[in-house]
Image 1: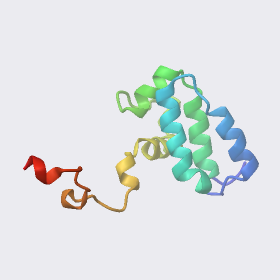
Image 2: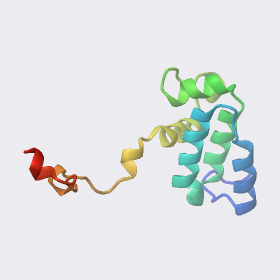
Image 3: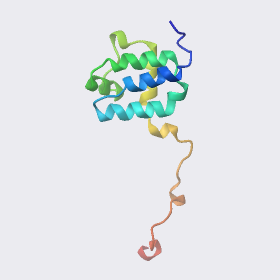
Image 4: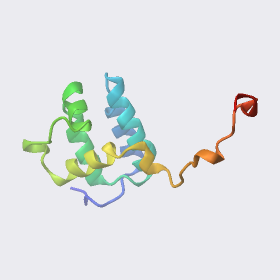
Amino acid sequence: MQNASQALDARALARLKWRCRRGLLENDLFIERFFARHGASLTVGQARGLEALMELADHDLLNLLLGRERAEGELAIDEVQNVLALMRMPESADRSFSVIDDQLPLPRNHHDHV
């Protein structure tokens, strides 16, 4: 058995991405964002957590991702909890900047409407 903190190799990552294809668009969006953010640094332990989540039916997975339900039983382990936390992280957490209203471009003829 591999060490949970060991980096996932490229072949295992490709297999995992294939395994994570779902039939529900909402799940696919969570999963695609997860791989975009964390795919390059995914560990063996995180891969095991993700594999455990992929055993769920689509609607059960979505309920976990949305926080409607809690991971229980076999899913109440650190590897799954870690992956769920990463998958639930809002998109805004990726941004390292903020937009200030007065920096947004004004529409054409803005002064004509004032």
